[in-house]
Length: 136
Ligand code: 5GP
Ligand code: ZN
Image (tube, rainbow, N blue to C red; front, side):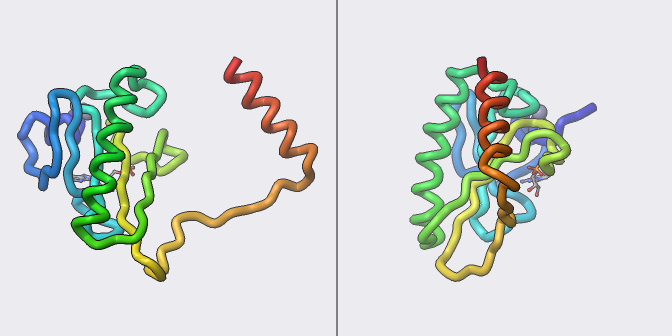
């Protein structure tokens, strides 16, 4: 099945590009949470963060930093959220890994997600132990 972001990389679908290297591209999200909402993607098709090779991940983080500073300057934002949806359960709709860079202004009223509480400290530590074990 065709990947919409691969089509954008190949120039077959137009986009408002803000940055590109041999390996990375960044362009405006077509349906922005806020004006200046940018998507940063590897040019090569990797479905999620879990699939991205380490060197490319480092390049992406460097690009995310640089573009974040530029977005804040360009739209005069005081803050910026870096978000990434991985897998359908987390809201990923385009299966080509991408970082969302969303500029934020004081009192803009945007609530990105609600928080909750652990039932007990034991539950919290049990989950931490499971994650540690899975990291190996
Ligand atoms: P996801 O839910 O996968 O994290 O986000 C996919 C994002 O891609 C959405 O915010 C959506 O607005 C954006 N998007 C989908 N199709 C296009 C497109 O053709 N062009 C651009 N610029 N953004 C797109
Ligand atoms: Zn793709």
